[in-house]
Length: 388
Image 1: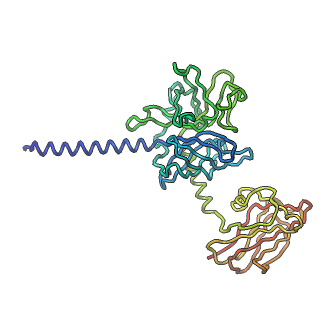
Image 2: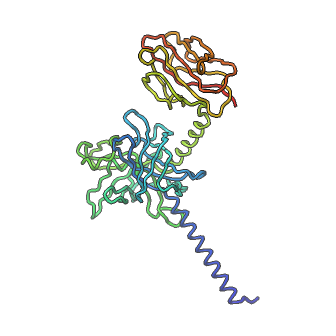
Image 3: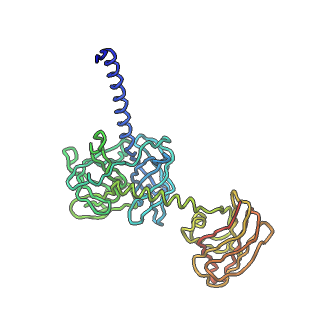
């Protein structure tokens, strides 16, 4: 059997081109697997700073962020939106945060802006086997002076049993006294050349708390990025606690499950107006049932009045009213629309089911007349029974 040299050369060239294209594709996959570190500023004017890790959802491609919950938590224990600045200078916003596990200081939110694309993904490779005491890694933070990034060598001190490990700063000739500062919360620790594919860098985890040998009060104002830092005095030596990406991926899946369940159970009504003095809670808490909405009648009024609409619904047949506590006395309830009253009754139970027959799903008012001394009513949830 003879081989035509020209045909063999042509085939070899095609194979070489195909191999080069495959290699480029693999490199692209590896590079896009690394998430984007962004600088985070809480959107309440407090100038609370930190870092976050932006990535794309593997199914939808939607932009998301993983961030230490304390970075976006207010003094009233609420997770609020934040402004983002990417390492390329592009801005964005993170919102709709949720903390899927209250024992882990990590929250997930949705991202808007930052150029509109999130090609990165959470690292698919397990990191547990790559985390070992004594291993040298790298910490990446944003550099506010240059607008770029700053890296510093760190050493893994120990590995915990709950998806966490700790790191300590490593002295160099250029920086003999390095410090890991509270504002580094959310910054990424990775292992240079630790990736399984192509020897690329392997993200290991995100800093969630800083243990600095310096008292917080002694830090220079420019060193403290966050006014709600996770920091403690540790005596000799300074280090940081890191949540690893195996646990981050697990919590990201849990956050998705909780978000799906929340979407499925989203109320079929919308609060369009109310006449009341709100003591605690918000319209959002009244809608999702996650908190207690407490209100009293406005001055010179005897009723608390809520008006709701039912987008996409045709018929209203009833209401289940869940109060936060047993009423201290009879609570008078009236329901109607416009000038028409559908039904009035009094209740002394925590949960009351009210049948309305078949009513059009137009804007409907609910009036509550408390008889207690403080005139307050605490509502846990309102469930309207509707149909198309």
